[in-house]
Amino acid sequence: MIVHEDVLQRAVDLALELGASYAEARYHRLASSSITTRYGDVISYGERLSEGIGVRVLVDGALGFSATNSLDWEHAREAVEEAVKLARAHARLMKSRIEFAEARVGRAKYEAVSLKPFDSMSLEDKASLLIDVWKSVGEAVRECKVMTLMCSFNESVEEKTVINSDGAYVVSKVPRLSVSYNFVLLHPQRGTIQRRFSYGASGGLELLDEWRVAEEASEEAAKLERVLVEGVEPPREPVDVVVGSEVVGLIVHESCGHPSEADRILGREAAQAGMSFIKPGMLGARIGSEHATVIDDPTVPRSYGFYLYDDEGVPARPRYLYREGVINEHLHNRWTASVFKVESNAAARAMDYNSEPIIRMANTYLKPGDYSFEELIEDVELGVYIRSYMEWNIDDVRWGQRYVGLEAYMIEGGELGKPVRNPVLEITTKGFYSRIDAVGKELRFYPGTCGKGEPAQGVPVWFGGPDVRLRRVTLGVVAR
Image (cartoon, rainbow, N blue to C red; front, side, top):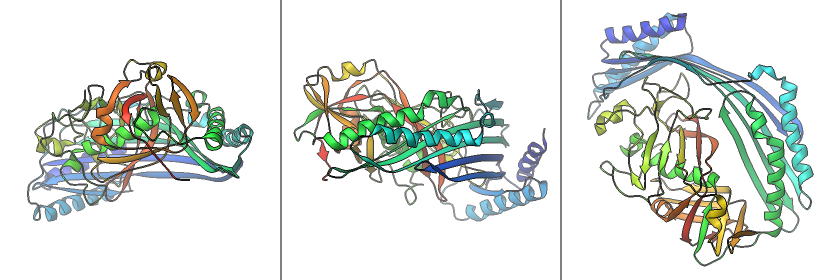
């Protein structure tokens, strides 16, 4: 073993000698760099390195966690001693003991595929990609002025080694790339419209050829100018609504993924990130139609939230959170799996070496169906297609929610018509999933950084889905 792996194993052994019933040590390195442009000028370039060892122990039914940014044995030993000390102190205050469910842990090494390394392109060429976005958006609009446009280019490499007292030994390396833009268009009579959009995946610079960022931003600016200048109000009466995959992805992340986190269901997140409408004992309860299947799958190749083993060494697999409209399973680590008397489904993940592993989503999406887009709208006499969103909110228990459309169009006689300005989809979780009567076949994903915990942790995720059709929905409108 290389040096840090030897230190990790010694840390685990020492924790057991000091009385831990379980111990894990994780080497975690995250190296990243970013370029930011405003208008067409580079305004910043930065590099960041986070590297260290995190130690977690279970002593007398309580967990203790400590970390060090030094890789030598002396500092690792101090981290172990601190973690054990904290666990013992907490044990005296525990109302019920923490136990870990039995789990089959892995011994493996894996790496996400990168066909074109980050260092195969110069810094100047990467900046030029962002400058091209500014040029293309400016050329795309006719009646509006581009008030501001910012772009960012971010690349990172995450490396981990996880060793625990149950025999786990997992070494991983995942490179990730993301590019984002944010622009505001101004029309002197019609006001402003703003768009922020990101691309992100695991892999190398080969992803840039697929994303075509400048071309896509140009096309989107032209469409949003039309929405701003020509957009009409949505119908006031109940209509059929086709919800675009970008909005669907956000909805399933917020109204299925988060309330399915078992620690949130048990109340651990109540004072931090909110609660859940799902309560213990609700497995098998109906939440939607037979078209509503939501999956969270860390193993999707090239995904932004990609991993094959979690930070407790448990092999990852697809988690069917809602299956055909029924609450099917929750997201678990080994502690919550013990409480619910199930096996862990590998949802334990930490942001960095200085953070404890907690239950997290990875890549959450609505399962696609077999409808083409044309088939989704062909029998809609009057409706609205909401392709993307501009703002959203959801309540603490993840039940009542509101999404304001950005690019949207009337559906008239089975065809797309005039652009619609600011349609509002305000609906409950059950209302959304119950009204789905047709699901598109094209699955699309969108990257995000999901926040949770105290201290706060942000981890890369994908959320996605196909386009879906909802029957008989009353839309609101944002006043201008």
